[in-house]
Image 1 (spheres, rainbow, N blue to C red):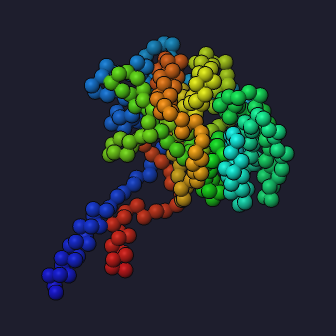
Image 2 (cartoon, rainbow, N blue to C red):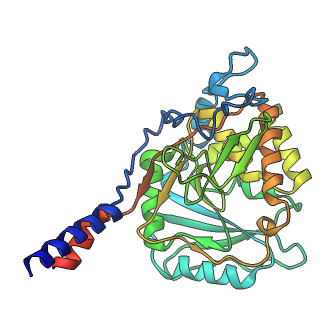
Image 3 (cartoon, helix red, strand yellow):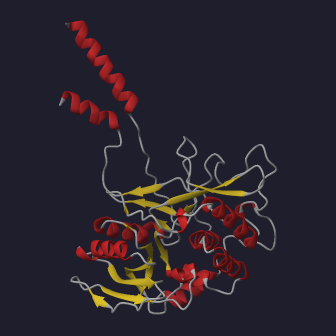
Length: 350
């Protein structure tokens, strides 16, 4: 009997240790990017001659200024008077009434203290825009029909925006209301110089010299990211403003987005990192964000990943270097049992 008990205890401890996983949640300094992790995603693979356009942080050319700090004074002068403690949702929709209705219903049903306004970018050009309205919690909802069919229009710095923080989103994805307020507060505290959101992506330098767009690795020492997608991400309106500036490199990016009808989110990440020298910030709520995952959409098209990789290379050529910066940290909402073996032990012996 004693031997069986000892065997059971030994087996339990071994199982618990096998299941143990510790997730270190690092709060990155909002003005200082985290150094590249072991030279994985944004570095040169050892078997090749290096990327055609190297990291801006390694660039020595007099024609490349990285980061471009001169934009800050102009941004403060132009947008410093906007609300800092509220945010606006800029939500793009295209002939998906069911997804739009579900997302709007979820966001308007609960009171989100810092939500100032929701603006629907109405890309249904063959339909009249619905009338604006105010939710039961006093949140105005208005519809803006762009003047042209362009993905760039989602990033347009609408002169009617009254907040510095803009949550860029699509009609099929959203944070739960409690988490959304949390993410906004994390943007205020840690993310004003960053794209701050839910979905991370990576850029990897291939031996060929090209940059490859991918979903990021989860292997040890490779779990870095360099972009946050604009289907659910906070940005400062100043980045939108610069995206629509007459900077030659940014102008080339906008033109290519119109040509390829793709990659406006990659373009905005390039602009943010080029201006600040910072990478993005991944923020997760206490619950998983909602992704309605409709069957249609650009990301469902054949060759989508290859098209995104091409964007990386076209945009790096425009800047004459790769501005994206690896980050290794993320922020999560709430206290979690990160040490799993304790939970297993407590269940067995509780």
